[in-house]
Image (tube, rainbow, N blue to C red; front, side):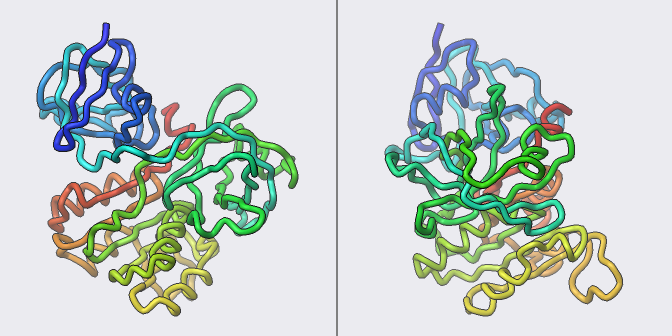
Length: 342
């Protein structure tokens, strides 16, 4: 049995089977609902049920609380339709989005940027026209069929020759994929990928000033957004807040400083939560540094990427305490396999 799902305010519609999540049905129909982990762990796909009935599969309380569910919010990645539904989903992408492709890639470069961060450059196949928006991500398909998602850290215009995507891989000890990347993987190896995925990309139709907020390797898609801004000559004021534990974790600190020096519209603020002696910069939680500097975010857009707790805290505090409109917060929550299992 299938049901008709209508999205507002876009008025786009698609059919969903009773045994499939709304998100899967939307993707199958070529409609880009917002999402992150696809496992009920991050809350990025949260939207509001205006009419109809759904049932939820397993999900984490931090992604959708009982109070939120009672208030009509749903997680499209684990919500199954039980009737025709009308769903409020702002920021739905339009027709003609880039197609999702499965493709091989060749490891072109492995460069250790920090003790636990690897820059991986993967050469794209010449016989496939892989297109994406700056900020989107790809899935690596492992031998056992499991997937690991990583954001592309370069914008589409900056692939180089031969064309390659850049990814920033943090080592998760015991991780099926990252243990291989940091131990036995060699250049010229072949990997399997699928993409592009995600709704984290620059809303270029806006002229609002931008806050970019990253924790750890959440800098990767932020870097792609900055490259896109520069390539398009977009002069909107931008401030980049990058939060890490220690100074050694700021693995592209020199790059960020150079960007701020070359772009008059860009300001860079590194923030350390566990600074060593001698650090003279900002300290504490990175999203709290934003609120200290910009207590009124009502006229801004925010692009946040990194640890789920940082993204969730920023979304909550920016909208409830700083006046940020809910539909001006764009996020990509880096949910690990361990997070999903939890």
